[in-house]
Amino acid sequence: MLLSPSVGDASHSQLAALQGTCHGRVKTGKKTCYNKFITQARAHTRTTPNLQVKIMLDDKDIPSRWYNLIADLPEPPPPALHPQTRLPLQAEDLMPLFPKGLIMQEASQERYIDIPEEVLQVYKSWRATPLFRAMRLEKALGTPARIYYKYEGASPAGSHKPNTAVPQAWYNAQEGVSKLVTETGAGQWGSALAFACSLFDLECEVWQVRASYDQKPYRKMMMETWGAKVHPSPSDSTKLGCAILNKDPDCPGSLGIAISEAVEMALSNSDTKYSLGSVLNHVLLHQTIIGEECLKQMAIVGETPDVITGCTGGGSNFAGLAFPFIREKLAGNMNPIIRAVEPAACPSLTKGVYVYDYADTAGMTPLLKMHSLGHDFIPDPIHAGGLRYHGMAPLISHVYNLGLMEAVAIPQIECFQGAVKFARTEGLIPAPEPTHAIAAAIREALQCKETGEAKVILIALCGHGHFDLSSYEKYLKGQMVDLEYPDEKIKAAMAKIPSFLP
Image (tube, helix red, strand yellow):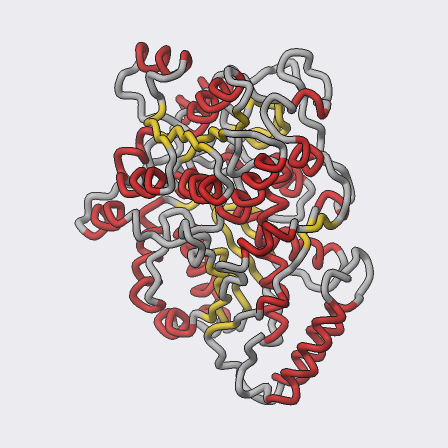
């Protein structure tokens, strides 16, 4: 681990030794090793201002287990239901789509699940990812707040998505699967799965939402470089795609449609499985390595976040950072405000309904209890393509329903205003998706400027925007418009939610 020079060599060895004994021992309801670790860290940093900009971890300190929040929640989440029988889903119901190893994780009640050694070795190609202090942004805003961001753009695919793509490809390869199919919005997930499949000699076929397929051609080229076959969705390669194109040849597509196309292909081929980049429990589980690392990194500089912001579409990056912090909140070790930030044009948490709905447009997937705008809803083609999803991860919906987090919706022009300010102070150009988290953090920091509060703000910065510069071009030329929540379209989509379900 790297410590601020103000901490000193002696404290570095003491904290490193303490962290080695603490790894993975935090338990709900007990102020155990984590509290001792952060108390000692603060004791060493109390007398000197923390000026450390980049906080890293050594390879030996990378977490070796994923964290399952379900084990610590006061109430279990509602079960997924079979789309035909409407009965709680059984493991065998998922066998046509997923390998056994991932199905077991999806239903697991265990608090921690070991990361396979081969997966961990791949992780070490880019993990641990850095935690940065945004000092130049703080200065530009004139705020007393201290702003940190956990940056996931260091992965080969440029986002957090390989955190789950690698284990998903590995578990499928272990069970003899030869091909994975999936959907992607902005292309971050498709890129990540293409990368992961190339590591384990799997074929990969991707349906990319048409709006993003047209906006981000280099994502398609990236996927093809790693060996994937890419279709615009809706496509003429599936029955559902053909039906939608016959009805609307200019359909911009949606993640719900792309999911349906990939699922249709998986169900039609016995050597093929489906892989999902967000929403499901096992996906969120894999992403918790982000938050587990970040807890250690913030302890190094003696900080505890007062506010955590992360963008939400399906919710995987948000959950990856937030869930380990929710564990600490439930244990009484800290009490941060945990804030999901979604696009105003697709506000599933803030304006959706908490019901059982399909995860895809065609109604082929299990029914999930989630905040939904209706599985038939096709969002407007906002630039944050990865957030254009009608629903929210059931586990995040459950946590939101329990009151353990809050949510806001922000329009895209304000998000890009924040992104440009961030880029011109911190140097990194964020993907359109995390601009929502940045915008929310800037709101909070400016409020601190008014009140004089020196809050610690933590941002989930899930990836870079190097393939999204056409979106920045539209903003800089004044051509970007805010696309608002279309009440009439959502009412029509909500009318198709299965009303007989609780």
